Length: 115
Image (cartoon, helix red, strand yellow):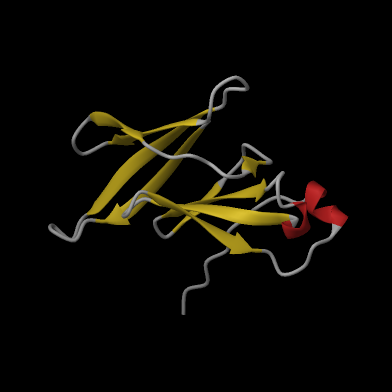
């Protein structure tokens, strides 16, 4: 699974692009690598996921990519969003507003309104 993200480089002020690679293994832990397009190099992210990505589809917006996830050990949390920030190269969790079974049938999308 691959996700494309961009962020604004603080040094140059230009947009930079990265590709996040996620390899799922049922025997070993999830494996993440990130490719920096400007430097033409791959690096391994030392990440231990404490949740399971429910869908391989993702959506990217303003320097972050989002997935729907669940936590097998804390089922009361239901489903939530996992984000990946391309600037800091870190994952984060975001709560969904309500927990309905219909989340299994939803998809992520992005709408950006310009004023």
